Image (cartoon, rainbow, N blue to C red):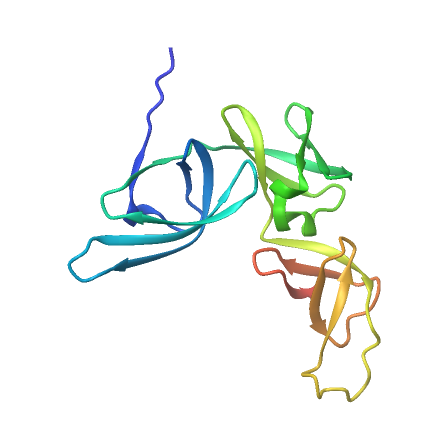
Length: 192
């Protein structure tokens, strides 16, 4: 017999990245803002994303609210391919294949290429979402020529990467370059 311990969180323990149970489903806190209004109680305004459906919501927790922390386990997987609206992965421990929809993955699909290693978030024994690395390496597939002396625009240009993601880079970046991209901000870091 296994014993499950449910951890209850007060609103001051809700932080960015915290995984909680709200309305019976797991959510991840994307943003939070704590405020106290005069004699009224404290309020925690949050922006959360449902880890199953991918939907984002805004919700304000009141001072006395208690929230269950979500029991999310992690495993490792490799991104395989995309077919229609589904992205397919393979668990690197047991080689089981599974898929998650683009709507659930959200912006993460902009950083997935064949072979990308990801962490799988499992809830109630099934994969529900992925966590991608903070930095990934992607190839430039389209880049306008950088004109010498063209610094009126700040010396930047927008290039397209192999996933279709567009990022602003320095003028010297060209087609075929491999770039390190920050997945949290969606920005250029360096040439790889």
